[in-house]
Image 1: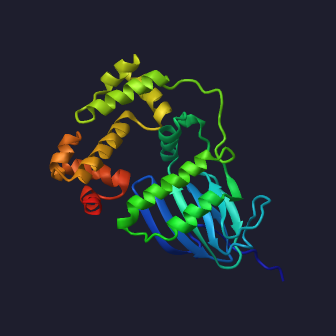
Image 2: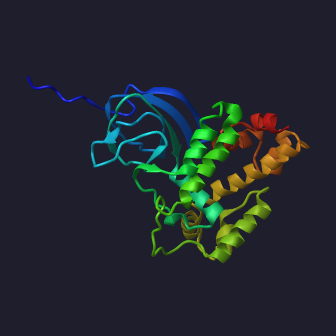
Image 3: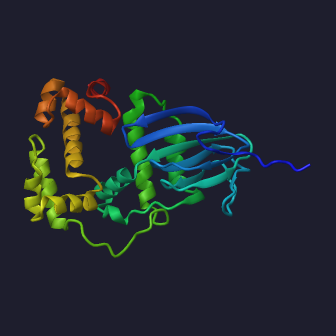
Length: 287
């Protein structure tokens, strides 16, 4: 009698057990899973996934391409929209860090002053990186994943992604790019936004600094910063609001107006989007 092949399920349909999970703003999230002995495929259409095995995985391997076997401390980097097929072995536990492409590119701009278009996330299966493993195993795995830990988790997440960016093997360059704002114009625009974040900053003001039409300025700004001028401005406002909240000299409603938000509710929406918690929660952690 001919035996039927095991059914291939998507990762979402599999019998995995989600041990814990937490979102950090709209760009980062974490999850810890356990599963075993399944055939499945994985495809994240929204974000990139960096996965590390905490335990087990010795018999797990790819079925759509030649691969080595998994094991504790081994990583897989799965770019957005990239599909992979797997045969799982005995019980394994692993953690996933999900992150937006633009978030990674903004880190590259902020930390390394690199053109975000140079960042290309490759597909990597079962690679080892002691620095990343230490951050996953001794920092993220040991934290209590609750709202009071979100800022700390965000900091460690950034450290993980920065370490990933520092790996030339993981982040190969793409050469021959054209366009984007010149370094001088970038400084002029960001200096202007830093000086005037407390008020409405008009697109025509920024475009005039770059001597471009508003349409072309927006395109060049996105090329250079991996975000829009409005989103960049809101990030500045949230940064300044954090400093004022820590100083504890003003009410939240006054801080919102001081930092250029329409009101406290407006500030709260962007806090939640960027940091994953409200201004009130941020204040409780720092005052």
